[in-house]
Image (cartoon, rainbow, N blue to C red; front, side, top):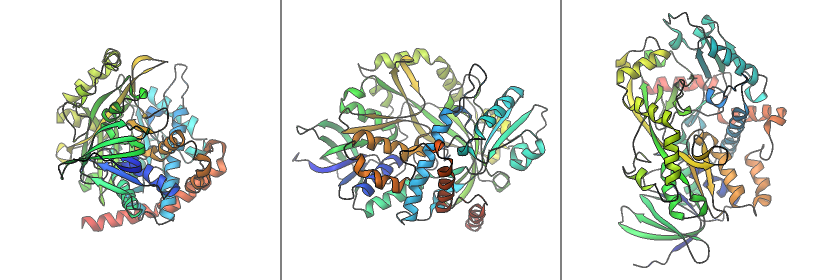
Length: 511
């Protein structure tokens, strides 16, 4: 068998939303570059990007309380919330560009307007929510945020949650009508249709086995054609590893210095889901609560309206599970194989530090269905077991690394890009906010890996993302313009017209 490699400019590993986004940006910036994609499954967006494998929240910190921690002095730190909101505005701008230029169609198939709410109980948390509201509501990024601790008002906002609630405990919520539900699986499929139309070579059922440096400094990628039963060799000047939980093992195969002292801990997710009309018709929002004391940020409970495949459902969770697999379609040996001489101390240190997380995961794995229903009834007092089914969501691999601030074995809960010193290879690791910030993260990859082109590309990037290079917080007028233009392009008008059209469409589909 000949090992003569096939040369290309760019190789993207994994057909999820990250590779789809990076490929789309590159095709708009340098259409002449050749791009190849390798995906082990038979179609795009089937792992972490799949509509059922994530909560589908357009993460913009409108309702996620873990992005606004309360500090020891009682103040609320909103810095992370501001950053995540700005990142989501960047994503919406790029998606709007694609729609306006007819590069993707029917945005209502992947994004829908949906109120985002935060819900808390007890005097202490109500006081925290009010402080959070005061810190955010005057900020133009969070325009339109409302606060209420009036049960009658809350009944209007979330009737399913307030119905037959008998406790005298104080309760409060905030509401922002400009939130969204996003089907990242549908978006990923649209972007890959666009890439194929732009002559990108997309290879499904192709598993990347290994990577190594070629003599000329490019990367040689060894690929297994699963259906053809043969090995192929490809070289590229730039490789992006966007394989979800599978990114860490592939990054380790590169042997670049930046891949050392990094580990990963897999966490699976479960949700309760209902499509019963009497449930679905009473809830129209994403409602996020507060994680219990001692629980990790990933455990924030939320009750979400979802639009998937033209059908409206309600989803509650997440409940954590454990599997040593790094992907739903991965191997039970993934975790063991990821432990290397250079990261074993990092992994052991994390194990010693994260006893609370270990205890939490054990408790979650041991939960019965009735115990899960008890947690749901904290949100919906009238919830009936027969109305809800359990679904297994995606696998997430939380990054573990050594940091200067916190020492060895620090568990990271965000999304992280690891880049080779020469910019020839990059890998995306981590979990939330993930897909919502895909465009911002991929622009960061371009800046790190192609610094010599950025000046030349900047006018086109600004055409795709008008706020590129600026802080929206410093440009309130631009924020208003972007909110208006993206709402118009993506069908997110605040008057609810698009939502009512979708409701009619869903009713027809169900009929």
